[in-house]
Image 1: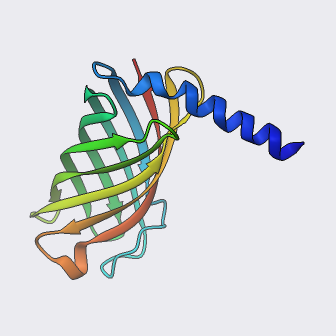
Image 2: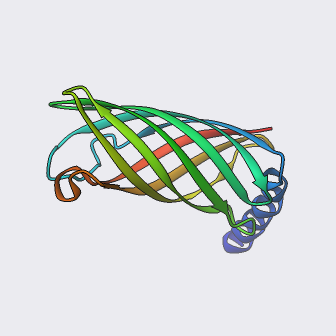
Length: 158
């Protein structure tokens, strides 16, 4: 009985998620990242906060601008980026990629290529929780500044 009820719940959630991924839908989001779960040879602890705004150019394809702040033991950084996401409307899974400019407080700059995989879980027709894992490849110092991490965010679709 539990498996059947769980299956029906997943079906209802996936059917209700289709309307949010239509062309012309706007997106506003905020997330926290890493929470000490990031891996890099350069750091042990990392905490980040990010804000995003976006627009669905086509069904299932979101283009978004990101602004972020990350804190580590030794240096803080500020990021700006332009990313794209593709949503699989059958189940709420999304994949994303793009580019980011990073300014470190120790007068360093970097360009990173982020790739993410996540899930869009809707609380209602407009608000979602979006956990994801990501990899950010540094073009300046591949081995020391590239990171892998986890983030959880909230999205508002209207």
